[in-house]
Image 1 (cartoon, helix red, strand yellow):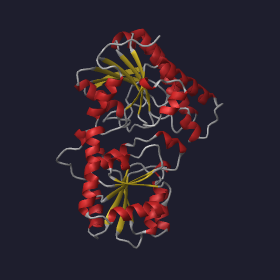
Image 2 (spheres, one colour; image 1 turned 135 degrees about the horizontal axis):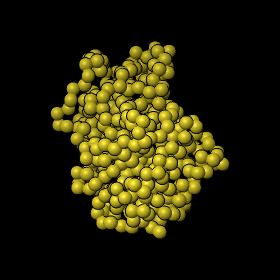
Image 3 (cartoon, helix red, strand yellow; image 1 turned 90 degrees about the vertical axis):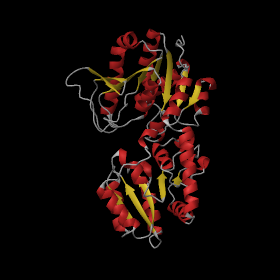
Image 4 (spheres, helix red, strand yellow; image 1 turned 45 degrees about the vertical axis):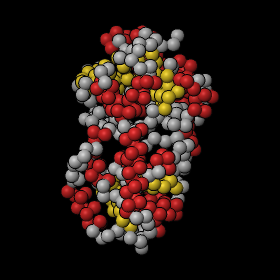
Length: 418
């Protein structure tokens, strides 16, 4: 089968996030399918942007996946420059549509750019190629910028996103959602349930070899020093942003300052300096900040954690469910997890690999940590093992890629709806 995967923000191991399109495409290629990814040349998620050097597009192959990078406009933040970047990508998709349909000859066209407006050029390409049209839900737009960003439903951008979302549910042959509890939302907008399939985020088992690479010297020395005190280590690894609710973790550490527990926050992000100041102001000797480690060293890093923490803000939008990559890493590392969230699903509870507690509550987080630290080592190991088993059974990309492909219609050539 020939698959055309449109994702504005698609990345690769060389370019950085987002990784999901790459992992899925690589698995499809390994299964004998031909896969082309179309992405913008500029994304705020990537560590490295592709170099077009004045060209309007760049084509390259990455592990058998054909990438087409389209020239857009640079931007920072979520202002008008990002809107222009989106507009430039959609315009270039329309320009390239006939060529992509003729050269790729896709059996399936997947529109997957977080925002839903790529459904329009994707549907045109699908019609030209006689292909099946699939839409992939990352976040529910325009609901996400309305509820998280406070944008009015009458804002022109929101109205465009709403028109596109309505178009999706009328015209897509299949809708694949990463969020597990979107059924009522999409049904209210006209999508029949037989067209909806849930395929969450996952992990690449190849990044978790039996022989784990060593952690960098500086991080390893810091963690060894902390472990040498005999304290249990509660760890967080990932972005330090507002949505990660790390202020709650620091406040929980404050309430546990006289207990035999140390807190380690690994990573970077816009809130890291503010969190450092918060810890310093409270004179918290039990909180330690470590610089980001390479992705390849994350398995080694997580082995130092006795308990892993992941937190969220209290947000009604999470009623549609969550599918965090960070949690998959914790579970794959067989770490027991304290998960501070209120959402439509409870991955930690479902897997039996830790405790789910109320979000934005230092008291609840501290109670969860005490409960897990108070278990015997054997009990924590068993809890962590359940998490790893759950991931290996349900959340690896070899498994998820098959589920996605089955949702797309398997290997048969199917036509898009009229």
